[in-house]
Image (cartoon, rainbow, N blue to C red; front, top):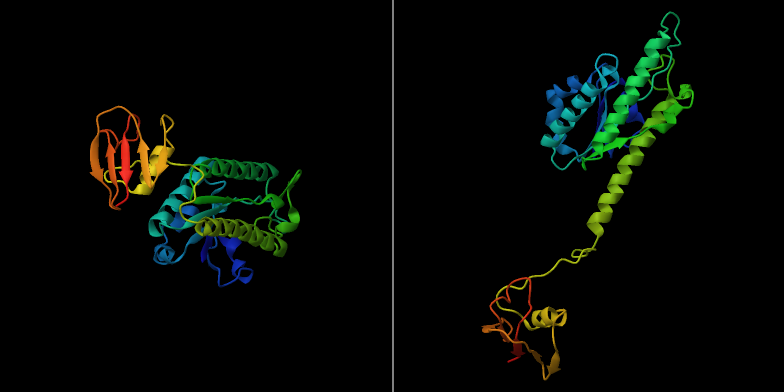
Length: 272
C-alpha cells in the first residue's frame, strides 16, 4: 500500500485513488521542511511499502532550487529510516499559470522566474534519482506545452488543479507505481539460481563424483578423459594427495586442487 504526502494539490486525490491501494495525507500550505517536522507522519510510515511525495511547490520563490532539492532528499532519507524497504516516489513540481481571479494577477516576470526555478528543481531531481535505486521521479509532461503551462489542467488561480488536472496527476502516479510493482513481481517470480553471469565455482575439501566430472571435463588443459566402469582418470605429472568424498569416491589430486586453478592435477576415482 502507498502513502501519498503533500501540499494542497493532494487535497482531493483520495477521491480518485483506490482506497485499498493508497492513503492520502494532505497538508495545505505546507513546505517540505514542514513535512519533515510532522511527528504523526513518522508513526504511520512503517506500515507503507511505498511513499509518494507531492511537495516543493510552496518552496519555489522562497528558496533556491538547490536547497529545495536538498530538503526533498532529506525527507526521502527520513522516510527510508522509518520504512527501510519502501520505495519513494517524488512528483515533479507542476508549472504555474496566471491567476484569473480579479485583482489577483501575478507579475509576468514573477511567473516566468517561478516556472524557471520549478524547471530547474525538476532537472536536478532527475539527475539525483539516477544514482538512487529506491527513489523514483514521477514526470508530468501533460502539464507542459511549447508555449507554457497547459491551462486546462490548472484551476482559475493558476496554482491548484482542475478536475482534469487532478485526474492527470493521479494517472501519472498510478502509472509509475504500477510499473515498479510489476517490475518487483517479475523479479520475485524469476526462478532461483538463474543468472546471466556464470560464476566460477571453487571446490574445496572432499569432492563428490559429479563435482569431479564437472571440474575436470571443463578444464581447458586436460590431456585426456577416460570414462570406463564409472571411473574417471585424468592423468598429469605433479605431486598428489588423496582425499575421500562424501559419496564414497576416492579422489587423488595435487596440493593446489582446492584453489580456483585445477591445472597439473591427477584425479583417480571409483565408486564403492
